[in-house]
Amino acid sequence: MRPILMKGHERPLTFLKYNRDGDLLFSCAKDHTPTVWFADNGERLGTYRGHNGAVWCCDVSRDSMRLITGSADQTAKLWNVQTGAQLFSFNFDSPARAVDFSVGDKLAVITTDPFMELPSAIHVKRISGDPTEQTGESVLIIKGPQGRINRAVWGPLNKTIISGGEDAVVRIWDSETGKLLKESDKEIGHKKTITSLSKSADGSHFLTGSLDRSAKLWDTRSLTLIKTYVTERPVNAVAMSPLLDHVVLGGGQDASAVTTTDHRAGKFEAKFFDKILQEEIGGVKGHFGPINALAFNPDGRSFSSGGEDGYVRLHHFDSDYFNIKI
Amino acid sequence: MALDKTGLAPNKVRWGELDEDDGEDLDFLLPPRQVIGPDENKIKKVIEYKFNDDGNKVKITTTTRVRKLASSQLSKRAVERRSWPKFGDAVHEDVGARLTMVSTEEILLERPRAPGTKAEESKVAGDSLAQLGKGGAVLMVCRTCGKKGDHWTSRCPYKDLAQPTETFVDKPPASEAAPGAGGATKGAYVPPSLRPGAERPGGSEMRRRNEENSVRVTNLSEDTREPDLLELFRTFGPVSRVYVAIDQKTGMSRGFGFVNFVNKEDAERAINKLNGYGYDNLILRVEWATPRAN
Image (tube, rainbow over all chains, first blue to last red; front, side):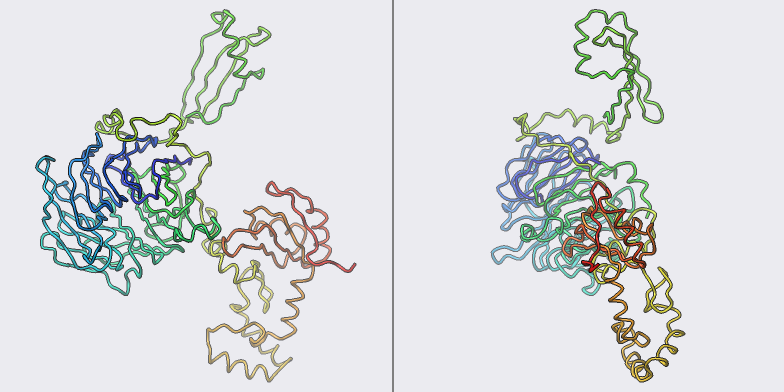
């Protein structure tokens, strides 16, 4: 395959997200402008200008009309996907990290970093259909975990919120009461910061990637550990194929160590694993820095990766990918 | 979309020349352009007729393989989005900005091992650390029973049978001490020289074997692995060891290796034959590993 290289960002990529139809790809980077691309040919459709800090995460509504972004400028913003106009800004007292729309797009979960003696928190906001009626009030604020919460996503039927972060523990919270329902066992769970979390297409299980050089597959309801994928570098990004039983792990050595070692030793490939056999299928090379973001097109026929090098690489699979046998 | 264009014209016609023909107003004399396909093999044929420089009629058949880069059934909404006007920084995009480029490099899903090979082999090839630890001994030759490629010496099923004879003949005291030590640290690593049954002569023999009939192969391509080298040198005679130097940091080949032959004559023949041999787009240099006295 010949990947399409998209060089719209001037700083390392942080997050990638496809819309539900799989025709748009949203990219967030440490520069301040999230960007939307056509996912088939990589053409830039537009940028969302207004943030004043690194953008860490984004999510797009099911109808592809709203975009929410979380940024280090202590805001999370709602955007009109089509025009790039800012609809609303949620202001916080600390940098916003993860954002996720609930099923139905009526609610959004936003996590904030620990900052100036403020602990990290998970905020649930109501998203009104009419942007003029939008308010910044939190429906629920969950506090408790130590350190950053790098990802928070909604569980089945919006009943739970799943979070993971610097304390390496995966937690499931009740989204109504904010009560902690389950947390991953210290023994079997991750040993270092959880950097990424990605739900399966049907939401029945999810994958977490960690700096402890592994990714783990969990059951969404019972939080039982299903599989572990071990690799030789810190995992910054994970994605699951909606089509095949494949998982992709992206990572690489620390960005600070990149210039001091041979680039071939960096292991900047996106590694494909068989989801069930936990066996490595292959690697896709190309980035000049660690991979920070991975996303699968909802049709499972292409995936994109975003690197510390500022590039988004969009890969349309060759037909032989679909016939890979281990 | 067009991947490979092959002009199958009887006379070689370049597109540059074709343009010049347009000036002559004889085109109406030619049969019309014909397009056949794409058929089930995604082969499309375009038949055109032109006049060449000498005024001769030339039939040009262009065979093209059509490949869809991305097949997708777009929803109505997605089609609508396709026509959305650009916004933000994308509105006034420089033509020369080239934000989106197709990689010039063909990227493949690199398999950790060739499809179809056994899992056991994959461990050998994939785990560079294990490879280093083994000192490049890819050929499994059991020192106890002499079987090749079946098991390691330590795993020899005939080990128990072979031991007593050797120990009794050579060094009875050692055989008494060693089993005791072996019993205390069962499963722990015991150097081959300390193992019951392995005598000092065996160790020195091994060292000698490494030196004897050793051929150094340099200017190897990066992709060359030990099995490849074995494949290449096996034709000259029995090979006892193949080793390709691997960079510890990168796990890549450093471009040289060693091959040990059982017979010196075979090694000599290999050197004569393969020195200067083109292998994987590089020219091999094959020589004796150690400077020979004779």
